[in-house]
Every structure is written in structure tokens, then in C-alpha cells.
Length: 390
Image (tube, rainbow, N blue to C red; front, side):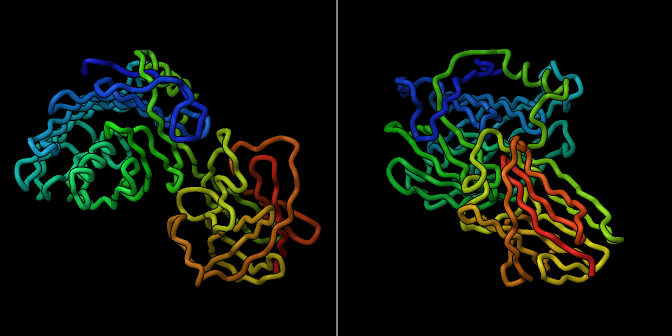
């Protein structure tokens, strides 16, 4: 167990680079961070650096609450020479995952990785470059890693490599220092921009360019041992965050045609939707995660445009209230892999205001006098376009 358990944090409403309080961190106090997804807190992290040792605790809520305690040792060059981690589920969720422990030891150009528990126990040895940074895993974007990236760039590194404990080779991290107090890193395909104070400490990071869009702020720490236990108890009661954008399927039969839409449902979580999460003037995946797929057993006419029976992907474009649905012939791709050359057509959708806000993005299919409607609802807006069976 680390010398400190968990850090509670005072959530800050500000979206700027500084917190709204008068607190200014001192050089030697623990670094505490809160990561939010809209109005929901999704991670809390605290770490301290004493001499050549970094010790920290990360509490994550997605998909279920777990605690990762870590200890990193630095060599004379300021690079991490070893990292040990212990991941466990709080006892308030007895159905949670079993403990997992890992260690990564770097000696010259070799990294020895030992995994105990979990789905991939065992030992691996991989070749690594100088200055490789071991991490807590692809899905655990710890700020201590971001700060290590920042420091190595400040020390003159042209780039850094990241290493996980799963036995895979190190991966190039597209990182760069923009200014004296701002730095970017690409954490396994998730680009983030962070900023530092005069001591070189990370003060926050923005995931606005990522699919998750979490925002991280450094805050004044104070001890609360109950935070992880409370979150885990909520998981056990079915009240946790779970999957941020769960998969959904809409099926309908209209005029003898069997129709299906497979997509993911991001939540509003107090955020701006139109022109915010749904970007202005940029093609949007019409959901989250993988591309949204639309299948029909019969030939259709959508907004006057013909398609044959088959499977397609749906994309969309929002611009100052005008919303167009795009039908694309490519399938089985991720939601960031839109190929405009394979767009078949786009149709402007009709807009209606809703009396009550819809928390999760929803796609439905409704019957109409002339055939049916494809319906998109989110926040206080409903968009529709008609289709008919050919």
C-alpha cells in the first residue's frame, strides 16, 4: 500500500487552464488530478516524487471502479528503470475483478515484464529504446506518465516510446513541446494537450481531440479513503458509470423490409451537444466507437436517394442547425475512419424541438404514411428523414 490511499478532489467547474481557487501548488506537495467526462468524475489520481522514486494511486470508474497503486524508480538520466503496479477492486464490490500485479524492469535495451493474475499471467522480455516510458496500460492514461513525457521532452528527447505490461513491443508516442508550458502526447491513439507550471509539473490536460473527450485538472488534494469504496458500492448496486457509450441496436420492420441500426450511445453528461460533442462543419460518426451501421433487407429510397438491400454506414454533418445524414458504402470500420470518396449521398434532415432533454443519443425507426422515418434524438433536438420501400 502506498503511503497515501486515495485523494479526494474538489471538482472545478472552470474549463480554462487554471482552477478557480486561490490555491497554488508548492513544488514538493503531492500532485492530485481529477478527470471529468462532462459532469461525471471518471478518474482520480495522486502521486508524489521523492528523489528518484514516484509513488501514486489511480482510481478509475470505467467500466467498473478499480484502484491501481504504482511505484516507479528513475535512473540517473531521469528515465524510469522500473515500474510495479497492483490493481484491485474495492471490497465494496465483491463481484469485481480479481487483483492483478505487474512489474517492468528495464536494463539497458531489455525490459523484463512479469504479470501475476489477470488473463495474461507470465513473463516476457522485449527490446526497448533508451528513455522508454512504462505505463499503467493502454486504457489507464495516468498523469504521472504525461509528466514524464513532458520532462523527457524538456531534457531534449525528440520523442518517446510507451510500453505496456502485456508483452507487446514499445509504441511510438507522437509527442512534442509546443511552448515552454504546453506539451502534447498521443496516448495509444488518444491525442491530448497538457500544460505545465514553472516547476515543470503537469497542471492539466485536454482530451478534446479524443473520442472520450475527458478533461483533466490538477486540484488541491485532501485525504478521503471512502471515494473508491463509494464508487465500487455504486457499481455493485448497478448505479455506476459503466460503459461511457454502450452499444445499442434498433430493429424494425416497415413495409416488409427488415431494418437494423447498430451504433453506440454517448451521453450528454451536462455538455453542449450541437456544435460541441457534435462538431460544427465536421463529419460525425453518428454515435460513438465503431461506425454506425444500417442494414436493410429490401431496396429503399432515403430522402429520394436509392440504395439496394445490404449494409451501409451512417455519418452526419451539423452546421448551424442544418443537419445532413450521409450514407456511405464502406463497412466494418472504426468511427474515425470516414472515407468521403465512398459516400453515396447525403440528405438534409428535418429538425424538431423536444420538450424534454434526451440524455443518450438515440436512433430509432418509425413507420409513416409513405413508408418510414429514420429518427435521431439527442438533447432537446429531433432530426428525421423519410424513406420508402422500393
